[in-house]
Length: 313
Image (cartoon, rainbow, N blue to C red; front, side):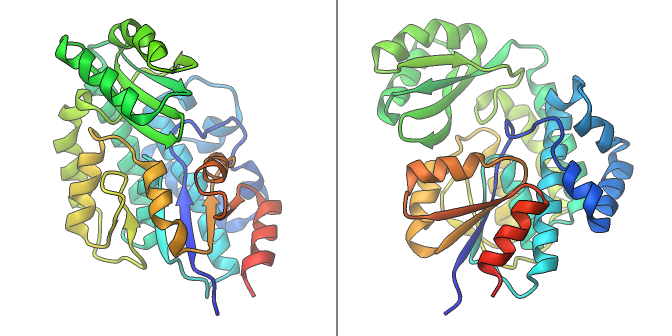
């Protein structure tokens, strides 16, 4: 009996200088994908990804860079294992756009442009405010939600943004409000509260102005072609229509990423998860969320060969 496979994709924060280089140097397909994507948005991805520069840390460039490397990894896997079909697709934040590409509903070159502009919309929404995000360690979900609600009653702008695993959440809002809430989070059980090096506040109300332009752009790019359902960050359930994709990815801008809840929802329905792209961020999270879910990762040619050997009978 064939194994049921979840194809998964990480989000912003998984980037690193040098990612994708092994693919590019060893695969004509990867080289072609890099060149086409670069032509679309006027970016030399080789320069962006393989040399120290400020742009890789800027949301408008981080997002297309991550998506491109993920889609190269996915296409190389599909080239090696054309008969392997996904049971479902799942992405963490930005990764949901990669999931949409992998499903067939979004061309990867269109997606590179889409998330490039998504990043620009997000930066624009936050450019006149001092926005940011804070990672919390050792605190439960209910306590985070309570502290955020109490802060909001006081007029502060602080929201839960990423539910990554038990005891590890990220909150978003105005930096001053995040800093003033730090003591309350610690009193509620947080062992650490770390202000992240970010200039945007993802997955909260501060991005409301980015919703309509993103929705308009997606409406012209997403197609009615879904190989398998995509698990929504917002609802933790699957969708497979253009209308739902546009609506849910628009809502995702201002709603928290329920990654932990999504993995728990799918863990009993799949045998293997394969993470595509640089690093193994989701593999690490999955071990702590659902320890029995076997998660593999493809980040270079060696890991590609290993996964192909394991899953492509």
